[in-house]
Length: 254
Image 1: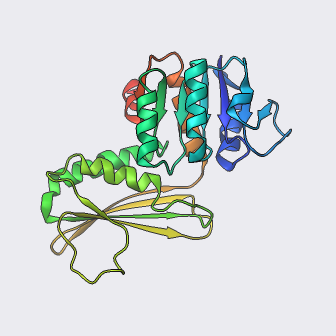
Image 2: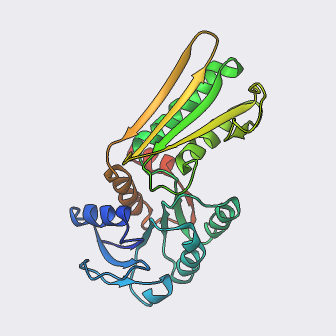
């Protein structure tokens, strides 16, 4: 039985993860971390990572806030706890920090835990490779009106992965209204929509001469992200130190 701690357990995603784990027989939630005190769970909730103490933990799943990254990494290194990091909005320096930490502990890091999104990324990379420089690439993401970061971590993840197979490193353009100039060829445009209760929608648009191709993914429920996180936790338990992502999980399941 894999023992899981959920960081951000009182948030929407934390509750989804806790609910899904309850339905499984291969893992259980033994604790939570959240600045909001709660006795609504059948496990103890701590206000900070330091309060976990000597609790026996096999994996920690984080759906909290970027500001908690360093304390979580400190805890994981000290207690040798594998981390599944699902929080979005990390800065470049924070990404570097978690990459360095993966030299001593197993870390599973993905800005989107959905299987479908990761398939969309692979298809987008293939499309960019086939279509080449004759097609402009634009990424449009839509989320609910409570989402803070923009563009979404997923949109940036899509752009980063597409960039890896382009012949030249592209420039990301987030705001076109502030300048009056034609679109440069070496660009990837990223556009954000915030409204209502949209769970998450991502479109990758390839615009060529007299034709366009759009690859799309729409999440109907937060459950898809929670399921991915729990699967990642089960996958990560017992792994050696290193940085893992959804591609490693998909290869193991194939």
